[in-house]
Image (cartoon, rainbow, N blue to C red; front, side, top):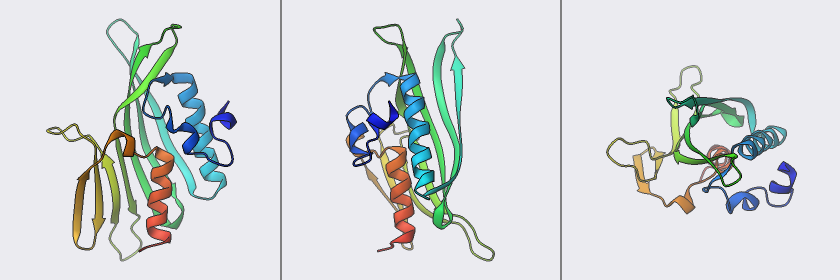
Length: 170
C-alpha cells in the first residue's frame, strides 16, 4: 500500500490529494513510517526520533494523536516536530485522523565553538493566531509570512527543504 502511495517517480505528489484531509489512522501510520524509511535510504534522515502519543477522552475513546520528537538529518540539520491530529470515526467505523496543529522547526546543530543556527519553521502553534506561518531565519533576522494549507509542506517535503537550505545555500 505504501508503495502505491509513494511511487518511485513522484513520492510527494502522489500523497498531495489527501495530505491535509481525513485519512485512516492505520494508513497514516504506514505511510509515515514508509516515507521516513525512504528518506533514511536516501541518506537525508540519519535518525528518526519521532513518537506517536495517543490521548483518550473521558469515555476511553481515542481523541487526539500527537507526533512529537526530533529527526537528525545529514549536513548537521536537526528537525523538531510537534504535530497534533484530530481523531474521528469514519463512515466504516474506522479511526480517521487529520492534522490540526503543525510545528516543524529546522536548524543546523551546534558544533564546537559555533552557535545553533535556525533555518526555517512552519507552524500554527501561536496562542493568538491559528493561521499557518513560515518563519525563515537569515543573517538579517526572522521573516514571517502566512501560508495557506495548500502551501503547507508534508514532513518529507519539509525535511528536503531544510537539508537543501544547508547543502545548496543561495
